[in-house]
Image 1 (spheres, rainbow, N blue to C red):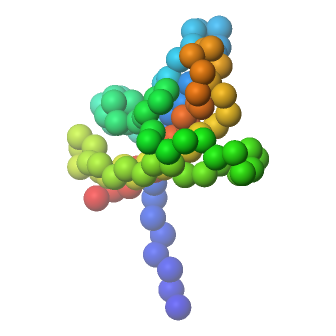
Image 2: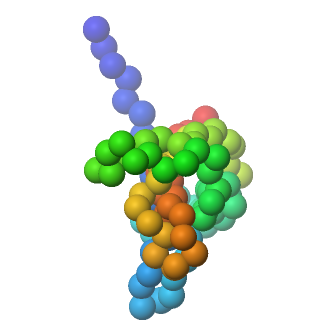
Length: 107
């Protein structure tokens, strides 16, 4: 059996508080992501109260996937995104913080 290798890039979109400010943004990304791809990922990633599923109270250590998305990026690549709840929102607005892991593939 042979396996194909797939090159991909990744980005994490969530809310953080840093010396640069606080709020939802891409907090980590592969070097291969272009600025226009990051803009589309930012527009398509859910933020505070951006998911329909309530937070899971069963196991706080194991996040539950609450959203999935698949969409094209400008130069013809594809993004697959999985969103989870990741603890409490740190801004005091209440509700869960949303954490989205984006994987970008060549089409």
